Image (cartoon, rainbow over all chains, first blue to last red):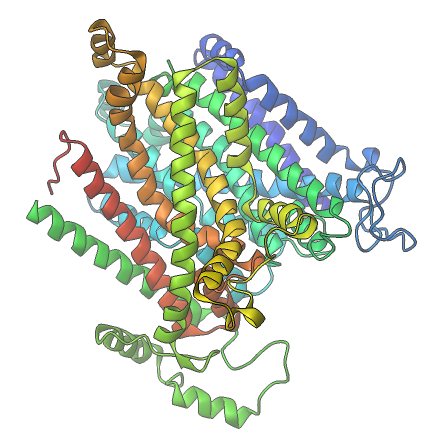
Length: 305
Length: 323
């Protein structure tokens, strides 16, 4: 549990580092200035950094362990000792919220990482090799896109039993790459016709080397943006699954199953339901705001006038 | 045009076929089987064996697969394991409920979304635009089931204006006069439809605003302004016509979304529609019902993108439907 979440946060940090270094190499100044001039960028980043800090430092910031039941304080409204109240089992809502941030953010980020990697590779292969590779891969994408995703995921979970965190991440990633691969494919198709790709090919480079080293970096903007906007969707899906009892299993706190836990006491203890929902809403809102700003900064074509 | 139509229909059938085949293989490969309810007392093995034989589950998988598609070609969806009645009946009961919910939600979604987007684009970058942009982003980012719970809390539990769930007040409904029945249905419809509609409207408004701002950057807008047209006419009659096209294609994508987004909402409001039916069928391992709902959902996706393409071609004279 802790190892997985620590790994998740490392990935977040490494990802941010990779993004920054990529921006440095490729017109960082210009894109960076555009990014920070965007009205929602700062706001979104501040919320994200705050949430990541809460997730990282959860043990330091929470007065109670997330599983501790204070039986005298069931469904207690917010007080100074319990700033967000307690839930039906007498657990501190704030502590659970902080630990739940690890799960919700981690699952969203890692799931998106799987999806973007897969989508990038499939899209690149289809766009670069064309021919039957393209036809087969894109027909698979067509089918994948036309089965509603929640059916896919719910079906997989119901049929293969309750999943651990790792399997859930894989499942979310494996069902989330279809749209990304289409974007990358159309990008790659235009790049492979450029003279410099011909030049590298003439030098005798292998196809996959060309794809990874010369073609995919051109789609980096599209990949980054679809990742930033996709994490929010992943988090919403995870929350929905956990709400249905199919995602993160209790007593592990996730924002989605906290809402499910609080649901039966909605009338008497609304705080147990309201705060996790607000946490999801603000996290996804911050991700979308940052994603919007990234898109406008990295992709001048779609920039608003 | 005819070639395009034929190609699209063929591609659509191929996609539906592939999706149903994939589901067929997946559910049969998965561990667990029907007639073994996990929570209840298990049935006697002989009974399970007889049931399996009756439904043809003891045959080899390729044979079952062939039989299923032969049966499907005759227009039969089979017998539901868990409901002990034809699948077609179970679906026929659920479809009107889902359609009522999703069409109302779509109407709220697009009316509200387009109007807000139009309003925002008209005063882009002013304070009201920025404020509305934050509001729409908030709704767009909400978990639908949470908004459903909040609306339930405020309007059903605290204010008591609307019921917490269901399609009708089951105890009273039979004895109500016609108008009363209508009012009762409406009262039950308000909260779930509003939940789906509001979250959708957040996305639609963002989309409409961006499309309008892009349209306003075109040359013909400058020409229209130079002609001395009123700003309202430029915005509504010139730019909006252009900016409506992406929204139309969004509507095609929204059709299946409303069907699947409804899984959670239907659960929260105990609304007996397709989403709830599918979720229940999956957990009961009701093979024919799972396959039938997948079939229906995939058809909705294919039909949605088809309708979007046709509507775009109707609305935009520059688009020609060619193969």
